[in-house]
Length: 84
Image 1 (tube, rainbow, N blue to C red):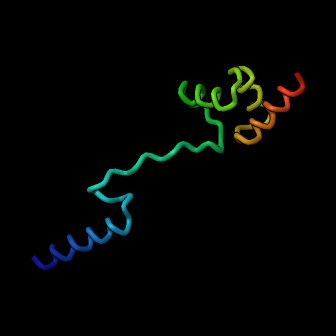
Image 2 (image 1 turned 45 degrees about the vertical axis):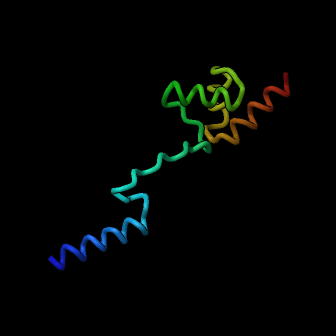
Image 3 (image 1 turned 60 degrees about the vertical axis):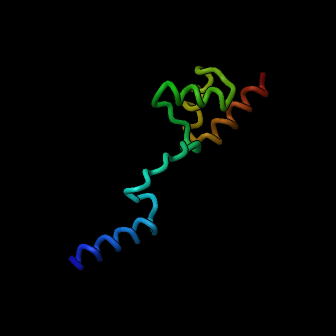
């Protein structure tokens, strides 16, 4: 019985030290990684269209040109927009 009590105490201590793994507290959803433009779902596409205030064809062309790094895509889209 003493072993079970110690295991329970150790489990409670572990949970306090690492709240992400606590059985009493569900893991918090992680914020999306906005460093990389991912277009795996319609929701992600819509998100990036709003972020860059651009069309889907322009977004896809920018990613094809400079890759999926959000900062590079933003710079490219601004450059294209300034050229008219």
